[in-house]
Image (cartoon, rainbow, N blue to C red; front, side, top):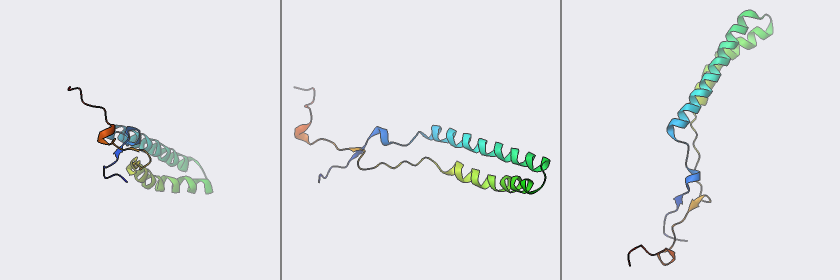
Length: 96
């Protein structure tokens, strides 16, 4: 095994923080839209379905926050890493 550290491949790097934040905000907005719809449906429906919508409206904020805070944490695995070549296998520099 070589002493040199493995360098992560660019395809294994996680998404940019800005891209990750926009995805999480979109998912949170969708969840809150569904929650609002559940509140409205709980008001205008009757019977057991009213309670289903009411419980969903109560529990959705917790689920939305947990999902919004779960960032995209892809791990850099060993199989996707690139190992630097040995010095004798590298191309010479441009100086002659």
